[in-house]
Amino acid sequence: MSRTTFDLLVVGDANPDVIVSGSPRHPEFGQREQLVPAAGLVLGGSGAITAYGAARLGLRTAFVGRVGDDPAGAFVLDALRAGGVDVSACVVDPAVPTAMTVALVDGDDRAILTAPGCLDRLGAADVPPGLLERAAHVHVSSYFLQPLLAAGLGGLFGLARAAGASTSLDTNDDPAGRWAGLEDVLPVTDVLLPNEAEALSIAGATTLEQAVKELAARGTLPVVKRGERGALALADGEFVEAPAPPVTVVDAVGAGDSFNAGLLAALLRGRPLRQAMTVAVACGTLSTRAAGGTAAQPTWEEATS
Image (tube, rainbow, N blue to C red; front, side, top):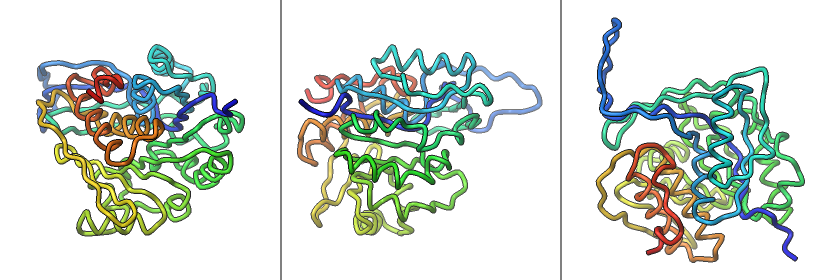
């Protein structure tokens, strides 16, 4: 009998997103009221969106994160449960509120304002060892927003790999702009999932090809998200590319997280890297069909048709 209960365990951030579509580039202060085409309250957080998308793709998925004991936290947990994600190991923190994000969207670009709330309280110790031992793959999101988790991530990934699981990391942006602390983490990270700007910053490189080579030299498989240009990876010394199909973007919020879900779903199904990247690009592209990170996430059949 397989040791695994879950195909994927995601550890990371979860919060409500307020998505403001058609936002002006420079909102007017002075108590001016400006009308926008649409706004919505949706599930947010890179980790939560990745978990939701993975469950949509058919993976048995669990999520570990922290929320406050407040309506925002209840909204997050209810949304994940409704998407088929196991949240039984999530921590409800009575002392600190749930993180909240406002995304001001203008076409395929956006400005993101986040109140971190309890994000910085999530740590590796919040992941039950028994759950870690029952997952085939462990994915972590938003490394730089969660310093306690970041500090213990090398150990957490080491335990996961010792138990037979593979690992992946999407650092997301570093608000401090330092991009430090990954020296001990990358060697125990099977797959690194940055976007192009993040890859350049982590590697300290001036070209993407240099960045990918530098990251691969640190002991991980870098798979870089490039938006409308698809994805680029380096495996066994060879560059691997997956182009993106043309699409009319409604909202790109969460597209990178949907890419993560697609890549992991394909790899865990035994697909070779190039094919897995093609599935991932399809998942990221299809997710832009509607506002918010989860509303248009595809099923496995949609992503592979």
